[in-house]
View 1 (cartoon, rainbow, N blue to C red):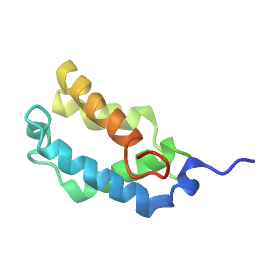
View 2: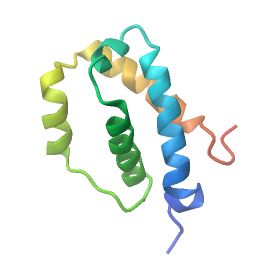
View 3: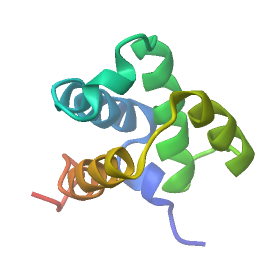
View 4: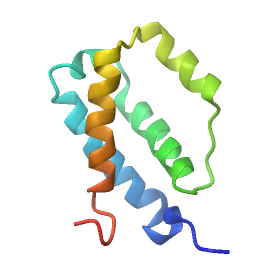
Length: 101
C-alpha cells in the first residue's frame, strides 16, 4: 500500500502549521474575516487541521452533516464560498509541502 500524503508530508505538525498560516490569511481578507469575528480560532484551527488531515489520508474523520450543521448558523453565502475556495485551493497546493515550491 502506498504511503498517504498525510504521512509523506509530515503528519499533524505540518498540517497544523499550514492550517494556521491559512487562517491568518482568512482573518486578513475583507470578505472572509467578518465570518470569523466571533470564532474561537484555536478551536477552529484544531478542527481544520483534523479535517485537512482526513482529506490527505490522515486518521481523523468528519461527516458532511457535521460541516453543514457548523456552517448553517453563519449564513455563508456564495461569494464567501467562492473566495474561501479561491484562497484555500491554491494556498494548500502551494504550501510548504515538499516539492510544491
